[in-house]
Amino acid sequence: MKVYIAGNLSIKRDREFLEEIDKVCKKFKLDTFLPHRDVGLLEDIGDVKEVAKKDLEGFKDCKLLIASLNGFNLGAGTAWEMGYAYAERIPVIGIKTDRKIKDSVEELSAILVGTTKIVTSLKDLEKEIDKKLKR
Image (spheres, rainbow, N blue to C red):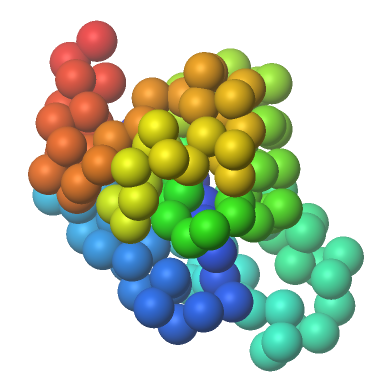
């Protein structure tokens, strides 16, 4: 199964967290698409249309999207990726480890919180992936 991992790419620590998510997926022998690893960063590529095209290609054969919701505000790219996955009927798991979800609804949006399974730790992410694989 292929998993698209979405989240903030502009801060190194956030990219490292996405790589931790990738390691969780690898425990289940899942194929992953990690935009900064598989496409690169805009600052290195320079062509926004090329980055967008390759990011969209990352959704090909994708059966699950895992999105980091950490940070005070959800990034526009992550929100777009989550919306795209939802529209394509690709299940989405959000992971928020830095603040309580009930304290973050305003920044995340009620529709996102109301339509997304959100876990609060990498251990809970493992459990949720395991559930999805057993379905």
